[in-house]
Amino acid sequence: MLHLASQIAETAAFVRTHWNATPKAGVILGSGLGDFAHEIEAAATIPYADLPHFPHTTAIGHAGRLVCGALAGAPIVAFQGRFHLYEGHSAETASLPVRLLAALGGRTLIVSNAAGGLNPQYGTGDVMLIDDQINLMFKNPLIGVNDDALGPRFPDMCAPYDKQLQRRAVEIAMREGFVLHRGVYASVLGPNYETRAEYRMLRRLGGDAVGMSTTPEVIAAVHARLRVLGLSTITNVGSPDSLGETCGHEVLTVAAAAGAKLSAIVRGVVETL
Ligand code: HPA
Image 1 (cartoon, rainbow, N blue to C red):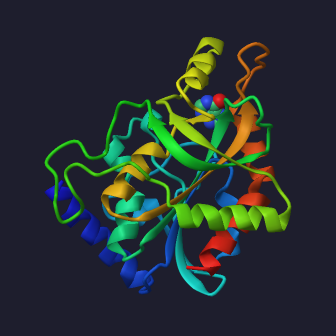
Image 2 (image 1 turned 90 degrees about the vertical axis):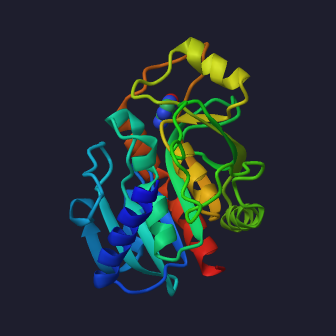
């Protein structure tokens, strides 16, 4: 971890040579949601390949770029692409965008993802406000020697998602006239989608949506004492008793179609920071 802090300081120093502002927030754009970055008045766009200590991203639907600029007049950074554990990345690598955001002085993380609905009331194209999470990846970005400069050894997780940001997101959805569910995000390693028995199990365990990302990032964000807002786009519904096939391209198409709802929330939240 000591190693990580100095690496991230180098990454942040590099970003500052291109864009020297303190971001009000950082947004991690999930599968199919990368287009949101076009809403930012970009001052610098840096491919991950150019960022010291960042790996190249490979997942479909993820560009692998850091976009720095202004949204609604506020300086923000957007991560167009994340590091998934199913790509072979460690949980610590998955948390690099969060660590970079914190090193740049950002205090708010907005994290988005594409997820399968487990709650039978959810429909394709709906958006869920993440109220809580279950980490079923059994991997953790905080494993190893703790760097007290980055955060505490045993971070509390009683409320990983910020209540005030949640309230704001609900207000925006009401104003815009779309449904915003509130539920529990369960994360699995992937990369296969779930079997019927697994969707049934995840529902019984308390999940409302299932995906292959986010929980390591949010653990690191809580460790770094960031305020977190989490949003899932429901791209398919895992109904165990009438399950159709799920395919990656369909997931991306549905996520992109729901992008306007996500954009409205992110913009509205950033405006109030
Ligand atoms: N399961 C896991 N991850 C996902 C799903 C799913 O059904 N849909 C989109 N991401």
